[in-house]
Image (cartoon, rainbow, N blue to C red):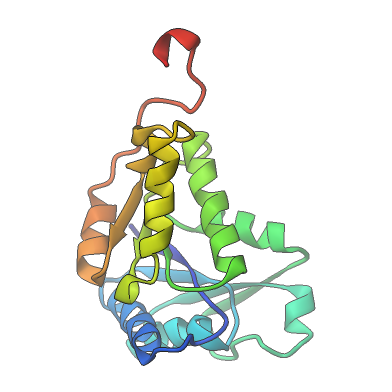
Length: 193
């Protein structure tokens, strides 16, 4: 993996561990020669992960919609800042630039980005690993919900298994390096149900 997109909150959250782990993830990516692709802002966990990577000499590409740049939240010290028109263009560009995705704690926007990327993978539009860094159990309830989707017949286990989860950075990166996308597509015949 040469580049990883990270989706995360534009806030810090209520516990210092979120900020600490975001900074450490940025540092770790830089130390391993992995370019960081992220949303381009200088606020919350977004700014923190960029600062972590930059502190270790890493390359950081931000992708920011024009309307957010006008609110002066763009990070000023990035390797490159790409300005796009819409939020959808932002996700598309971030997908084009990366070899994998990591999701950190965040709100609605983070979840929307995460679910679109995992849906694209489920549909076979890409074969990139998608990891959740489950800091301090932040995503425990979401992980339970995804399992409920399997148990209630709305999601196949093979698609659930596409989601890589860990509470440590090194373990998550190792899972992502070893990831093999499923060969089964989402759409199956009645005989396969």
